[in-house]
Length: 442
Ligand code: ADP
Image (cartoon, rainbow, N blue to C red; front, side, top):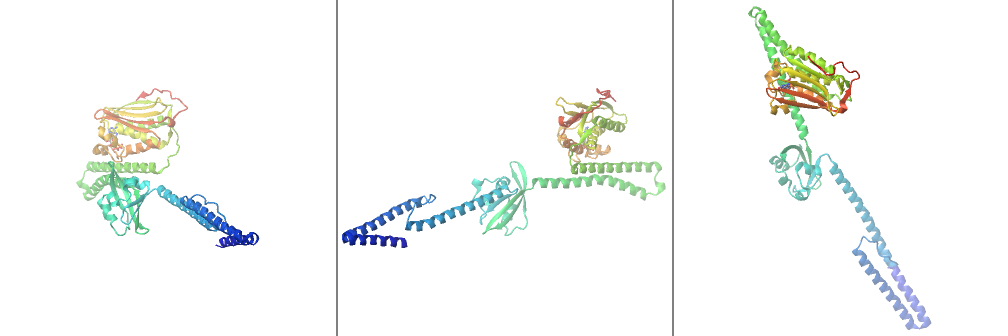
């Protein structure tokens, strides 16, 4: 305002001086021209400002005099607002990225429980389509009745465990709702399928171990009570001996079970180290000696062992895997059968240990289940021959820890072939070549 008044005053002064010199008419004319120039300049500036307001992100038009006083603070404020907005948008993007990176699913719901936003994990867990489902009630999206009951609660102290079937697969999700903001809700989802599976396996395992222990313990305590209750003369020395033999057998079964359980536990807890060169041929021969004792001359053994082949691994683990396949062959092959043991190099540089028998064989449906803990095709036969049902589970564990593969081929009534195939990276050659690399029949 001051600048405008000063400009008018200057034009008036100019007009008055010229009027005194060149006459009053000239003075008034100059004053009028000055005012006209000021009005035109203002009009021009106004039209520039009008143009700028339409493209407010552009720099403001150049201004002089009074216009500068008006435009400069507006422009400074606009610039500051723009910077604040950019900062807020960056913070929002960071928060969104953090929510996306959450290992859990997260989704926000409006007061009417319609979907506002969800991260990708929540979309995967619940099968949401961010575009289509936004704005729809979560009760219509997750249609399980137990979820409807949970979502309608007033407060949520505990999470809900929900089993959802999607694409033929059942997933177990843990959902937790919490109020936030003004009447809105946050829901966190976590996939606990694997945890639940492990928990079930653990429960089954404990139940199985208890069951396995109960049978020999019942038999043992039964005989102990019989021997305690019966008067000395009521039982012959021969009968007493028979009872004691049966008790010893049960005690032996329990010992074998505990030994296998300890082996499994150590396989699960011991870190898998790089290993050392293991003389597999020597391990095979030790296992063979034990199996021939078990066979009591009832089976024919054919052995083809490459004495130059060794494996990098854990000695004791490999020893238990190799001997387990051999003992099984003896236990599941009727007298008169043949057991063939091969340890040979493969064309790809790997090595194969194979135990082939002419025993009872295994039905195709049972083959995939053989390495499950406590799975037996014939429980009675396994127990009668001192089996724990854990041998192949241990073998499979050892095989995996050596990056090897366990192959099982079998024909019921004709026999089975169990092979452990080691990759080339695990196979080494022994320094000393044996005298009889072609093998021999024992
Ligand atoms: P087990 O102590 O019962 O032998 P394993 O885990 O070693 O336990 O074997 C699991 C089951 O696999 C056995 O109970 C048996 O039914 C079957 N099996 C294993 N080896 C053979 C084999 N060579 N021939 C036939 N069946 C076998």
